[in-house]
Length: 199
Image 1: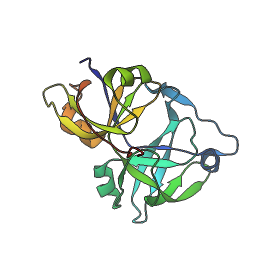
Image 2 (image 1 turned 45 degrees about the horizontal axis):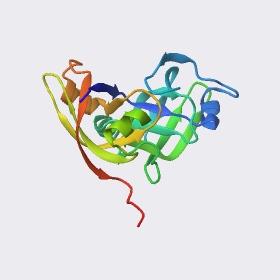
Image 3 (image 1 turned 90 degrees about the vertical axis):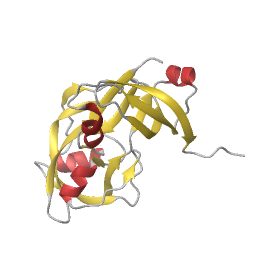
Image 4 (image 1 turned 45 degrees about the vertical axis):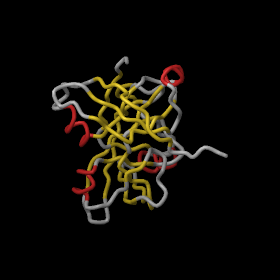
């Protein structure tokens, strides 16, 4: 089976337009630092500071474009350092997650919820999904290559336009990639689907 990209995501945030303007000023638009593999997404030149209830802080790169809801994605190691208990969630599932404060050059935003540890996932375009028999939200197992080859279970399939790529966080990347010697992975088996089929 053909291999695909493994991309390691450092801590970052996605902002709603209203929050972007509170942090950077009215009418502000994010500046592109580099384009990412997923269609239309980019790492911006801007960053913000996250402040937790325990007064711990870290810097977050902003990933564009703006979204409907603000979301912060960190690793488990970040969670320990920030002294918070962020839940492991698929992107977009922020209900009853951890809150905090985002601080920018023009203001701040208090979040009641929105901080998560992103669940590992596999971005798969529609033609590839059809070829492999994969469905959106299905869970699969994926094996990386390299000197520290690792099998990741419970990987959620996200069918969308863009590059076929396994997305993992820095903790998972450090465990499996050994300093970046691995940049490829392959699907080894399908498991369950997150959503139940309607009877």
